[in-house]
Length: 226
Image (cartoon, rainbow, N blue to C red; front, side):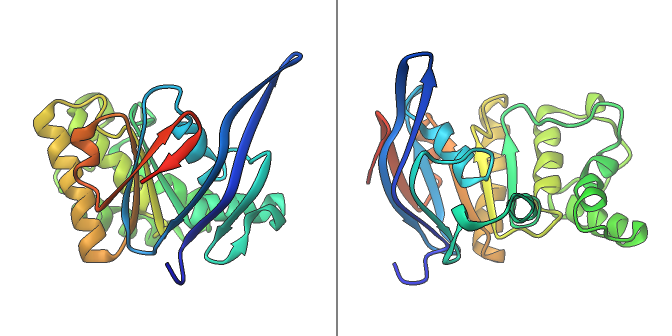
């Protein structure tokens, strides 16, 4: 896969629990092309969430290499890693993680205020455009408690994308949604992938979710197959 956006070579992660070594990732090699829509599928405890945390700069591997757009992540400074996490990667989680006392618009504006220092007017315009993109033009002033679960997840998606990242990681993104709303969120991911070329990595245990991806990689006992 020439020009892969993500390249993993024999990636391993071991946690120390006193004298016990817990090997969570046991040598994962994987490539993800720019514009791919990939599902990392595995049961609880398989290592898939640990893998996503490493891919998203929330954790570091014990050994192995992680290249992002050809750049060895292990060689990045702490500040460079933080910049990459804030500006090149978007996250969507099962629990939405919205700030309850802020409007949908303010929630989406936050990454712009704390990231690249976009001027307030530009941040507002960009956040408004992103909320319109996810179908919430008429809900911008609403707080999370005034929104349905599906609407909250759309706000979270808009927030994840407002910095225009090249990769979106979605960890069990439909876990707190009913089946119809979950299907709508997955359809939104598909459109973003196909229409805007966004690289999407879904992390899930649900075959119904992974069926929306172009490619499925199964994580079992800290190893990848497929």
